[in-house]
Image 1 (cartoon, one colour):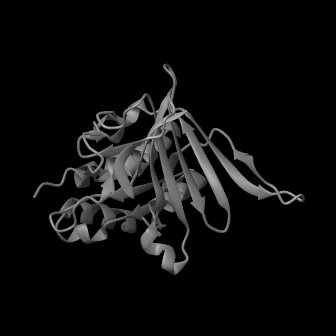
Image 2 (tube, helix red, strand yellow):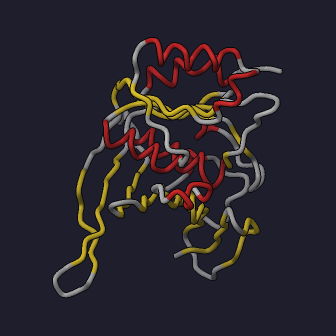
Image 3 (cartoon, rainbow, N blue to C red):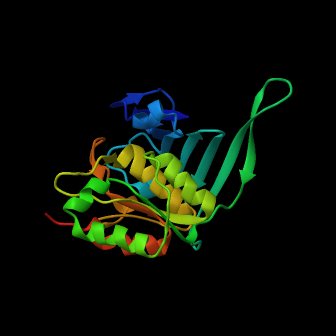
Length: 240
């Protein structure tokens, strides 16, 4: 079924000989926190057709991420259909049967993101130059939001879906530029968040509307509850 595949570890698009879909994936999101034995994950974006470059995140047929922690879970998202305000997001748990075989069991269906006072502030060094981001973090703290940041994008996004809301913010500055890759990380997770009824934005608007001009394009992001992503907009539009 897969014609073309590209990995964050090997960005050149590979012809796998199938047909119908192209897949971009980050096999190990959170590699910098493996040594601390924190939860890490994998991310997959699935596009119809033979190409990945030149596409938009909104064209994805589905997006998937896995979290490897005390439990191994798989979250699958499909985009919303015309007339719907959100898509469908499901969570599966990897279980071991008495026979020794393993099976994915549906744990949660129709996962949704609402308003929740939880924040995950990534790239905090940017607050030294990005005054809007500094003010945003101060706002969250002054309002006694719950801080939940692990250093891994997948587990932090999964926490938002598990708790039913919150925000993952990763603005930038001159000395702390964007590191998240649009193709392998931002676009697939943006689809998951928006399918659950949240927002996923960068400086220009929805991450899903940004054209993937090449495999190495990087972006700032804010993903999660609509109200908090909207509150993040000034920090995302930081100018040198």
